[in-house]
Length: 252
Image (tube, rainbow, N blue to C red; front, side, top):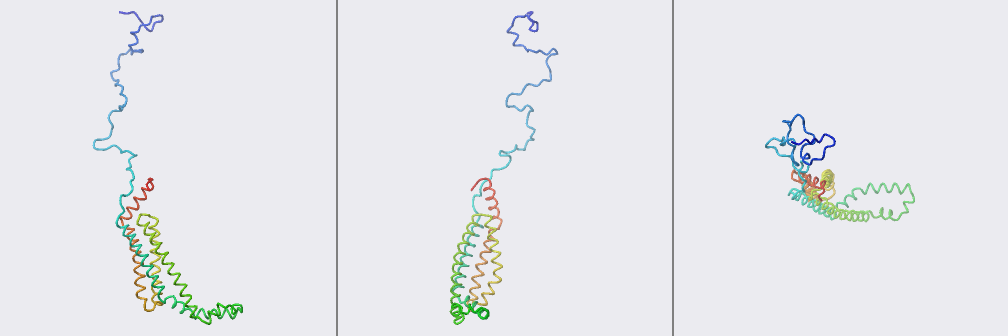
């Protein structure tokens, strides 16, 4: 038995003493001591999640946002209907320009215009010397024809611009752009309101062509309204909502 005591000063170094505990417990080993957990083990044992319940998925519990796979047929039909509405509207504008509707409108108001011009010419002598006004008063038929030609030109240019605008609106609505769908809805509402004023005017001044003009004009308005309705159907709205979420997630 060795008399080596590492706690007494002046004792030589004994290498075998390093294998023993540097601070031995004078009361013996603690029977309640648990073994130290290995690296990577949960020190609290098994996870408290009950069987049958999955752990939270990756990405914070949210599925990755994906862009919609395919456009629904309702949006494709909406694009075609809005485009047809623009084409039919241009046809109605061309029919109005080739009719005598604008001439009849100017002729119906000519007596009032003539009376107003005579009053101003009497009160202002300088106006009486104006050659344009003198020609207008001496030949009202030429003035009415010139005004009819000018209004016809404006109508044709407006028809071309209208077709381009309808195509652009229908194109972006068909692609699922929510802001353009709202714009198309506003334009359809304005067209519906204009229907109640345009139809009586056509019936009053278009003479024998009033029936055909009203039919073509109403068909164009109804096609545009139908296109907007298809853009608000449930498949279209779901696609637009998914597209909006995908764009917010970084998809283009």
